Amino acid sequence: MEQQQIREIYRSTERLTVVLLIFALPAFGMVYLYQNSGTLDWDLPALPKLGEWLILGAATAILIAQYVLFHQKLKLTFAQAELVEKTRIYCEATKQRFWALFGVSLLVSLGLLLTQSPMFTLLFAVTMVFFSLAKPSPDRMARLMKLKKEDRELIREASRPE
Image 1 (cartoon, rainbow, N blue to C red):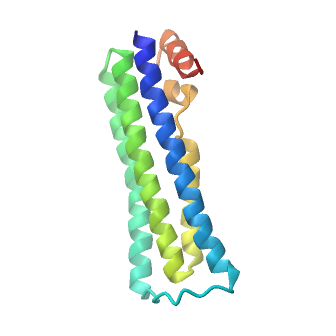
Image 2: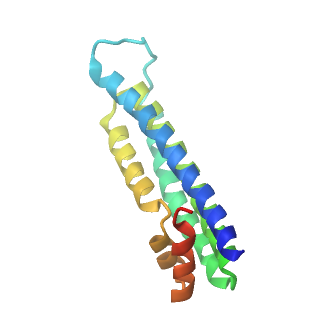
């Protein structure tokens, strides 16, 4: 029963993370290719330099905030005795983190579209690093939640396909 609950929690989180990544990559890719094509012109308004810095600042602030908030929520797992509850807290924190990363990816895509600044491409690359490093895996979950060997095995078993 416990393993089934963990499996459901883990699977829903894994699906969400993959779906958000699947939408984030093409959105930025289309804007990036549009900017580098040189043949298309949508006659978009130019964003003032202040607007560019505001978008860069907001995206950077969200990147920092998602990291800090995730680790704050992760500390809540240390006070829990039940593995299911620890997994639930971890997965909710991960979902929140991925929504923030998805928001950043859309924000930098918009910034690149309106300014053509390479800073947005760099910030998108940093966002993709966070997407990659934050993706839930049994080993990452066990390490971050500081699980005992038996609990590590339960998480690993629950993450395997049925």
